[in-house]
Image 1: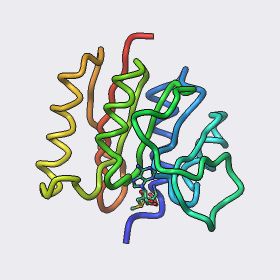
Image 2 (image 1 turned 135 degrees about the vertical axis):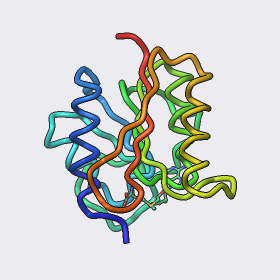
Image 3 (image 1 turned 90 degrees about the horizontal axis):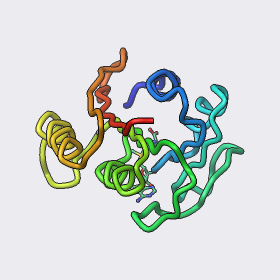
Image 4 (image 1 turned 90 degrees about the vertical axis):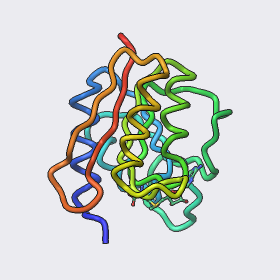
Length: 150
Ligand SMILES: C[S@@+](CC[C@H](N)C(=O)[O-])C[C@H]1O[C@@H](n2cnc3c(N)ncnc32)[C@H](O)[C@@H]1O
């Protein structure tokens, strides 16, 4: 069972690391709990996922793709399964920031090789800064993030 604190902790991290990113795409956001936390912090957040049962948040009921028009300063993915590397590629394509908390890999890698792979992948995409961070919670808690110069 994933740690229920992940929504608040990750939202706080995103707000602190990306203070000027006021429009956020929450990819694979499930029922919208991360959206709720980011909204409390003053971010206009759109969640992309296909959950019918969900919270009353701004929600795009569809799968996120690289072709999604960009109206965001930051794209985030919390335990976003098959959409995690997509968040990084989308951010690189549009010159915006990203933060992901990887969970299951998309290519059969186990957890540690997977987040290291994502870090290396981001590092060769031209971001001004790429980093990692550990959220103070149980389970899959490592953040990989990147940003361009403001
Ligand atoms: C493990 S759940 C995590 C949900 C939520 N972020 C959380 O932490 O509870 C993974 C979610 O990824 C969604 N998902 C996977 N690929 C997606 C994509 N391309 N676009 C939007 N959602 C996607 C699934 O529908 C599922 O809700």
